[in-house]
Image 1 (cartoon, rainbow, N blue to C red):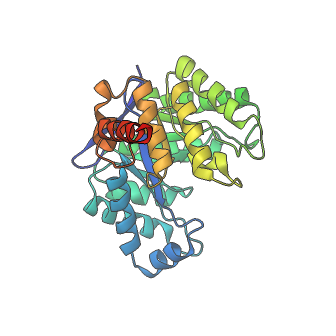
Image 2 (cartoon, one colour; image 1 turned 45 degrees about the horizontal axis):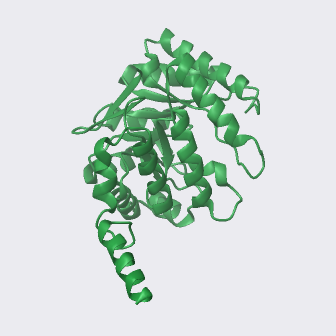
Length: 302
């Protein structure tokens, strides 16, 4: 079975078919966060520190770190953000940038084996990102689009993923170190988006033997109660074989969906993780809660 191993200086995380679902915290990203972008650009990384700590405390196994700010020195900012996050947490990181120089800057200061986010099927990206991944012994997220854009046909996206996996092999990068992002589309715009991902994840798992990830919140873009949609999507994606996602662990609905899916997929033996998370919560269905309800029913009958 495919197993992608990433690490920090002191902790190892396994993304794999037989492993619990891996949560990659999405919050350290200035895109759409004007205050965070302004702070990072001015050299204030206090919010980055807080976001890193809060996500790990909420259950993130890894953190995605992005420093894409217009008119800023992204390579320098990304390297600084990575050093700061590694100083306050011990989880492995996903180094997230579309700029190759920024990826190399981040990799050069990273302690451990990183996950590079990302490479696409475009020739220039394959020829610049994959050598960098090989040089630093990293793993890489492979996004299923190429020069033609993002196809709405999941089988076309599968072939792009196959191309990336094969090209990675040419650089000595094992398929186990390629984590495919099949590209989640907004369900509000493309009614078949959920079914497409389920179909793709199964093919990627069974035919290419690769692990998978996604930007989970993309599925709910433009809809109300986004966390409800995200939770439903993640439950079904995990049931189809998805092994990780870039998402926010700060939303209880999302975490319950992921932890519950781990239970249902047999990846939480004896339900021990679920029990440790929810047994003592006053709003949970603990034995005490059940007994209390029974006592209330008896009193009402009397």
